[in-house]
Length: 197
Image (tube, rainbow, N blue to C red; front, side, top):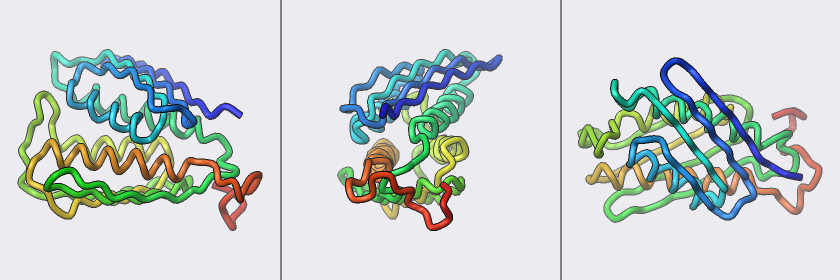
């Protein structure tokens, strides 16, 4: 059965299209107008082995905030849609990824209950190109709210802002991949004692 999500979201500030195939090969087609954000979403698709298309037209003449936020909201909604009934998946996933001097630890539960814990080093450079580094947490908040998952992201150390953000996206990609993959030992079984996720 196909596990594909497609969400179109249009407001006065942005127009967003997101398509995601959880059983893809990591093919991506990303264009948000924010170069570093495109790079991070490309990491998400490639390392998650998700086929991912993201097309955003936003009010970049103001700043990148609405473009980044609305894309994350649509991505979370598309991910939730692609998960479907969650029968037969692993549900939990975790991954630790180093990137030179930085390290990110990500753990996810596709629980149906949105919750975010996020820590990263203080004193990071405020900008990476047109990308405001304070937006990383906001991306995760927006994604979690729409995907309805519990997500813990911890960066215990790192110096370079590019590395600190990128290792988070890579670890997130792998954790989501592991959690959303089908468990061959649990075919037809919902991974919950509650009987609902």
